[in-house]
Every structure is written in structure tokens, then in C-alpha cells.
Image 1 (cartoon, rainbow over the protein chains, first blue to last red):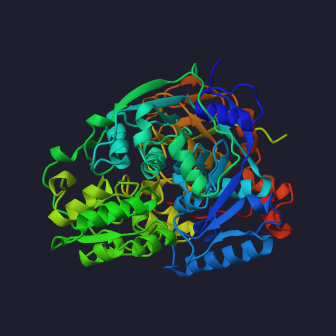
Image 2 (tube, chains in turn purple, yellow):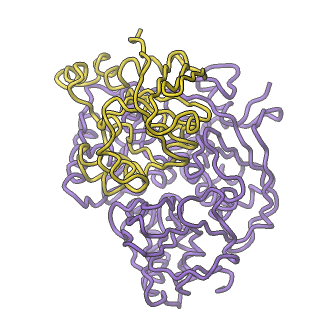
Image 3 (cartoon, helix red, strand yellow):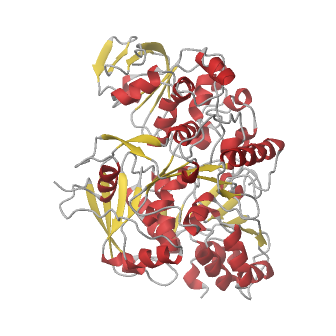
Length: 414
Length: 188
């Protein structure tokens, strides 16, 4: 009897010959990633932890500290890493959004289990890692004991064929999938097929990240040459990939022909069954446009935005915010001239943080405003007022729309 | 072995589908202490609800309950005195947060038609039995796995960690006496 990628991975980790949907497994966690918010409220330093070498602390959600509460969280985090000799500590200045930091530093390894306090931890499924977000209390328990449990959900496989067309990105693939098939609550998602080779790692991570928006458990990509070279560049070696068996059992297998895709946009509220090709959306004037987040603040996203904005101007009445996903992305984007192009066009380039994506600090929306975002969620009230409307699209579409002043197909500008 | 999780009976508050974590624990509430944050649960979908809900009440929701972030919404429900959650379908992260906080949660197919607002609901997560005391109808669904019942029976994972010696004695003592709950605000 065959297993899907995630079943294979969890079976190996749980030392079981077979794991299937419906099983409950107990596994050791290979990497436990704590974020700043974990330390910001009623933090109690534990007396002992499982293994400091399997702990990473990342300052990301609220940096530099916008409030006394967050500043105190930083103090707790620094005291904690010092007390336990945690070497992987990404403090302000060498920080980034945790999922970008995980990727840059090779902390997510194929065939292993990674847990983190943020719900977009499924991002690391792009690296064939069983990764998911867990609540702060559960993360605290993993920090202490080194293990946790999972109830194994059935798997849906997306079989990709064709090639990604120009100006179409991983965001569009995801928005197309979410618009077509809707929620995947209590399901695992698996991506493969001959088309995958044309999907670069940054786009795979966007797709994996946004599994959270369709309520999926794990999102998992297989190990191919594209991923192998990505990992080799980051010093990740000696891993055991989790491949799906040919006779694995899937809840559903769905075909996505990349050749047919065009830029997509999701309407406000949810991405599920709520998206259309950008070419079909009505003319909506924008107050704010946002390029950033763990999903789409990657170097490649900034490159795409900079190329569109180079020599152009953000339309009057539109505020364009760009948040690099990490300090490393910021520095590389500066070196490559992307930040210059963005700022010259009238964009505000912020420090790396989760900030505007979750409406906590910077870029909060007022009542009646319309925002087009490339970030992770378009829930009502997510970025500020419940009376603001949040549309979601790719960095290319956001950049082109910021220039036009309304939601625009990026292919019309280039 | 943990103490058994007893059946729970309480007033049902019935909500709809796809209630996300931003609707229960918005970002601006994450800046507040637990008592103030708890006043924001369902602030957009049912304004004023937190003034009406009473200790022992049960929240009933539809499909995809709790999609979104890892913010510990369960702590807010517990602060409001909510005794249990029932949903037709839970987001797994949200469900885990409830379990780890020691808040009983049961998946009940058709829950939002089986229960109406104001009905008296009973659920037993140990056996899977649930009943609408107001209509006199009872049904049975899958009970929670033993591993999950063990966590809920212990009052959540923090008391378990306290017993296992991971927490400072003073904090552990308070936790095991039920005098405080530790929570942490999180996440996008």
C-alpha cells in the first residue's frame, strides 16, 4: 500500500511502516522556531528545554518594537537565548520574516519536521519539509519536550503540466487553485508533475505558504533538481527526501495546466472561490498597494516589482508600500538597485517585518479604503478597518496597478 | 492517566461558516491584555456578543471554523467562560489551540442546523455523544482520540509541562491550582 509524500515523511519520523489518513502519529520535531510574539505576553522562561541546537528564535512580527509590550518581548527573547545558549537567534538587524529566515539559512530540510509559532509555516513545504504553524502554547511544549503529534489528513495532489507563462507567478497559480477548488480544511496538499520544473523556488514557497489561506494542514513539494540546487547553495546536505509512492492514495488528483494561466486577483474577504483573472475584474481605484510578507516579499518579488516600476511613477492618490521579507533580501535588493527603482517611483520601502500584512503596525487601512496586496490574507479587517476592502494579487499585478491607480493586468504595461 | 473529561451542558450560541481568527482576535486586540482582547471576539460578525455570553456557554459554528493564524483564540473563549466548542468542521490549527488550552472541542456534522441559538446543548467528547436538550434529540459522532482526551483531561499542555518539571515551581503551583493561565499572543 502506497503513501503520499507527507504520509511517507511522517511514517519515517514516527518509525512506522505505514501511515495513512486518519492515523495519529507522535514525532520528534527537528527544528522548533519561535517568533517575537511568543515572548511578548506572559512569557515564562522554562527550567529546561529539549535541545538548544534544534531551536531558532526570529524577531519578525513587530520589529523594530512598535510598543512597550513588544519591546518587553524582545527583552524576554534575548534573555532566553542567552540562558540556553541558542545560537540561531535572528535579532533585529539580521532578522527577517521567519519563513524567509528559515529558507535563507537552510533550516527546513527535506524529510524532516519543522514547527513554528506562525500559521504560514507551511511555507517550508516547498523544501519537502513537514512544516506547519502551531499555537504558542504547543510551541512552548515542543520547546520543552522536543516532540508533538499530528492527526494525518487525506492528501489532495495538484499535478502541474506546461510552463509558467511570462508575468504569471506562483501567486497566480495559488489564486487560480483557491478560486477553482476553494477550501482544503483538514486536507494535505501535494504538488508535483512535469510542469513543476518551470516553477522557481520563490514561487513554490508562495504556493506552499498560502496553503494556510485555504485552511490546509501540510503543503508539500517533492525534491527535484531545482530544489536540490537551492539547498546546495545554502549548505543543506545529507537529507532523505520524502517521495510519494506510485500507488499512493489521494482524496483527489487535480490537473493544473500552467500554460493556460493568467494573472489572478482575489476579491475581498477570502481567496476561496472568490477570485477571477485580472483581465475580468471591474475597474477598482486603489488607495494602497502592498508588496511584502512571507509569501511575496522575496528578492524575486522585489525584482519583478522594480522592473515594472523602473522609470514609472506610482499614480497620485495611491500609497505603495514595499516590505522586503528579510534584512538579507533588503540588502540584496539594495545592491541590485531594486530599492532605488522602487523609491524613485514613489514607493515607501519599509524595514523587514510582518507589519502591514497583519495590520499590526505600519500601513494600517482606514474605513472605506481599497487595498491591493500581494501579502497572505484578504480577510475583512485584516489590515485595519473592517470597512476597508482588501484585494489580493501577485507582486507584478500590484506594481502595475500602483502605476495605473486601479487593478490592472501587468501584461498591459509591459 | 488524566482525569476523565465529563459531559458538558450549556447554552448554545450558533455562528456561521469560515469564521476566521481575525474575526475573533483582530490585530489591534493583540496589543491588549487578555481581558480587553476578549471583548473583541466576533466584534464584526456579532457586535456586543461578549457582553451576553455567560460562563458555561457553548459556541457552535459551521464549516472551516477558525481558519487563519495561530493566535490563541481559545484563551479568549476561556476568559469569557466558554465551556466548549462545537463545529461542523474545524481548521486544524484552531482545533489544536483549543485542545492545548484544555478547551473541549467536538466536530459535529450539521451542527448549525441541529442546534439553534439559545438551545441547551450537551456534548461528551469522550464518547462522541451530543444532544440538543431543547429538542430532545441526541446523536453520536466520533469521540476524540485518547491522546487528545488526555491533554484536555489534564487541563491543557501547560499543566502537563508543570507536572513534568519544565516550569518554575511558583508558576507551576499557580497553574496546577487553576489560579492562572499562561498565554502568549501570536501570530500573523
